[in-house]
Length: 105
Ligand SMILES: [Zn+2]
Image (cartoon, rainbow, N blue to C red; front, side):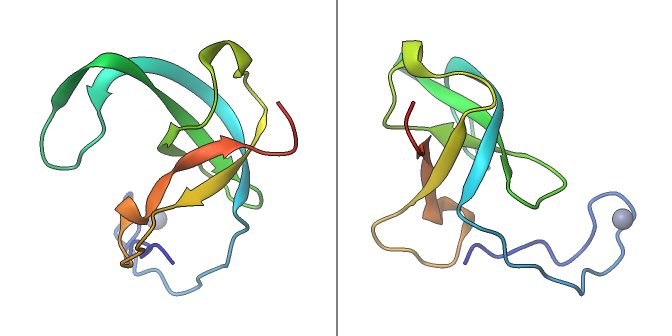
């Protein structure tokens, strides 16, 4: 759904074997920040947002994504989370609105 990188970010080898991953993953770490994630520029908002490192089940690496639909006091490392898609997915990274707790907090 989200376009994967076509080259390895470390050795620049062309990526050829793509693997479908589930929408479920593990929250490896998280923080609360006033900075908004954007590839183009930094913006600051008054209320904090939760940003987490999510490793999808079966993946070797984690990705930085917004953690949504959860209160800060209910969040913990190693909790299972599920992707929340944008309302109108367009095949771009922003299609991932964020991840929310999955299977009970
Ligand atoms: Zn490589």
